[in-house]
Length: 393
Image 1 (tube, helix red, strand yellow):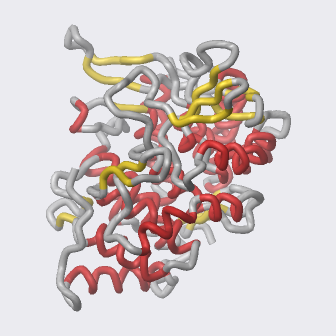
Image 2: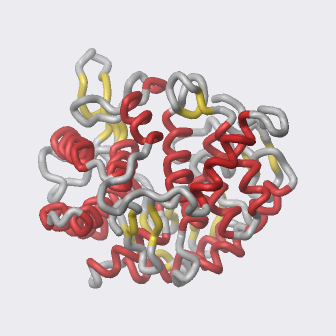
C-alpha cells in the first residue's frame, strides 16, 4: 500500500483541500434536507469496486468478495441515501452468500474463483462483525426508508448471531466470537477480535432484541478491552485462557505475523472515535486508547504495527490508518493532530479516480469512507447506537 506521507507545501493544494473538508466537518457546508445528499467518495468507490449486480470486488485479492465488503457497502449506501445500490448489494449478498435467505442463514465470509475455475463460496464460515454490520444496516434502513421488511430481516439476523456467534467468557462476560467455528477450541480458550464489536452496534441491537446478549456485551466491552490492551494500544487478535487471563495472539490459522496491533486493530480506534460520547462506556474507551492519540500528536502518521507492550514496530502506515484515527483525535479534542491526518489522506487522493492511493486499495477506501463520512457529518451514531444521517432531517 502507499505510505501515509505528508505531501504538499504550506499553503499548497493539500492545505487548501484540508481547509475545504474541515469547513464541511464544522458544518459550514450544508445539504438540502429535502433530498438525499450527494457523496462523491461513495460514488467513486462504487464505480471502482461495486459490480452492476451488487458485488464488492477486491482486485488485490484475485477479485474476491467478502461479507465484510458487502456489509460496509450496505452501510455506506444507506449513509448516502442510495437505496438502489443498497438493494443490489443486499440481494447479491443474500443470493450468493446466504443461500437465498439472510433471515435463516448467516452469510459465508468469502466468495471468489475456486481451484477448478468456477466461482462461488470459498469458505462457509461466517464473520460475526460483517453479520452485525449487515443486521444493523438492515434495521436502520428499515427505519430510515420506512421499509419494515429490511428491519424484520435484520432482527432475524441478530437472533442468528446471538445463537451461533456469542459466548459468555470468564472475566469478560458476554462477547461476540469472530465466527461460529474455530474460536473456542477447548473449554479453557476463547479467541476474540476486538475490532468486531463496535459499541454503537451493540447498543442499537439491545433495543431491537432486548432478550439477546447485546446489553451484556455492551456493558462488558470496556472492562475486557482494558484487560486485553494493557499498553493502551488495541491488538488484532486476543485470547482468553482460563486461570491466566488475556494475551495477544497471532491471527488464528496463520503464523506469518506475530501477535500485534495493526490492520484489524486500527478499526478499534475508528469505532471509539465515532461513538457518541454520551453513550454508556464511551468515555472509558476514549481514555483507554489515549496512548494512540498521544502517539499521533507527535508523529506524521499512526503506527502500522504495534507490539503488545506498546512498542512501535513499523511507522509506514497506509493512508487508511490516518483516516481511521481522525475521529478519535477529533473526539479527544486534538484538532491540530486530526488536521494533519486529514492532510495525509487528502494528499493521496488520485484525481483520475477520486479515491485514496494509486492504485486505490479496498481497505484504505473503506476506512476513509467511515472516517470522512463521519467528519463531514454525513452520519452520526446516536447515544443509543441508532443511526442519524444527513439526508434525513
